[in-house]
Image (cartoon, rainbow, N blue to C red):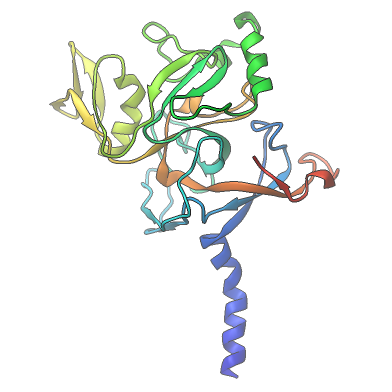
Length: 281
């Protein structure tokens, strides 16, 4: 009897164990990763690669910070990995905040310590020599005149036209924060790292009167406490990603997409058997 009870408990708990520690499945709701992922794809997310994230607290209400730790994984997230993560602006406000069921699937463009540039529509990483993402769509972006792009699509983070003037066609170079690295802050780069610094410290970073202040104290440099990533959608014309939202904390990463398990038209009943169990690269 005890043996039967033990087996029954294992059967009941096995799906939860798999979802927490090994892999999980998500449905793609938009075309931001086309042609790699299509609306209606069911994607299998491997949590063993970066290591499963374990929650320390299960209070996920608005304005409650994430409390978690990560079990060591097989390897770090790499450039060109397709990753599922919690959106960095969970409640669409101008700061980094965690929201439990608000997740994106995007391609990794920059890892901690990288320098990332977008030049004439193409992604570049100083520590990665090969092409990043879908080159054909980047070529189309490169060749599309600004006049044919809506200004809300063209303008990019941190949305300072006077000093930086960055667009999704041309932005950077910028450094992706890495834990333990100290940078000097000035009237320009504080725009890039304000959200990160405020997320780590809980204090406001402001510039005024010719000086920077963190809370009530003057500040001229900062040492990052956490690792961050830069993710973008393959559909560079229609993707709400880090080009608009800024950096993603490492603790927001859920896992790396490995396969499409099943695919059905999100808005209809048309199955796509040619995409079933397709490897994602």
